[in-house]
Image (cartoon, rainbow, N blue to C red):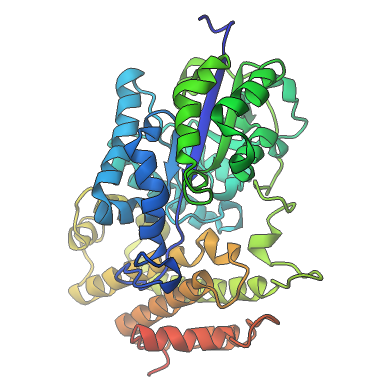
Length: 471
């Protein structure tokens, strides 16, 4: 059929898992509530990632996978990892250079809440990780939690990214009849970037009601088919990839039948965001809603300072973020002091560090190339401080602040990352790095638990045998 007779359809899934366990070894360990599996990554792989990969769903959707999950799959579920890579490779082979995979922020950080230099690092490291896994440069980029601001879009454009995707509510004066785009966003630096608008209502149905939609055929006939009258030339459905098999058991089959049969019967032509980006001109120029996300709460409050109402109090998030910010500042100061005498921008150097490692350059070779006059003692210190910088980035993973329980795994992991990074910096430089974190965490409390931030710090120091507080 011609493009006039069919509506383009993209089904998008973002796949991710929160980091947890040992900050230095990446070992998750045993999680009893994931029984009969060793931990939740193994359980979700068995119920979602592996079955979706085995039946070929990654060959028919656009998707992104967080770096932490990709690394875990590479090491622990290599066949699933291979099939995810193959899904993108098949798309590129069929419609070069358009693939099906998008890059994402390296540590799944809420970019609008990050410092300017950290936004750039997260984007450049995320692109480098994508290139390592998929062997090509990405065209698109998934913003964690779809959280967006203009500065982040500028960094994406500067890094060569062509597009991202948002919810329709994140586009000012959005007109539903214009469909999912593409649209152009003009940027203050004179560049522009393309954005696609997710169809919010149909995506929400898919995300939270897939068990009750009567199967892919019924939904395609009764929802997607009639929607062709008012969704323009492109319909974008976007959701968490774990919807299919983990959040809703067995629904990888819903996705299979939708993308391989029923959507086409309902009058749609399945495509990828890369293909639409390369082959379609933007409908018009739009403006984004600054500091917005795909969350139901307005703004980014739930990841920034929490909230209090009659049912829950998560204001501890603001106190925890402040403690992490202070720890990051202390770590940055130690890192800057070591590098600045060499007339090198420490954060441009940080941007380059992880991509170099992904390209199989050793830390010693990297430092020798960029800081040839640095003495051996300082080189060893810098290697350790690079480790601390990586841990600093991991503290701000979005899941740290998505978790509404102060003593949950993700806040604990963030505190463990902070304590580990400070311990490394303390050992490398001889500085006392205890100035602020213990005091800052003392006020991280919640009415829902007697556990405090200080308790979790002590737990991390004991569990991972850290040197912090031992000087």
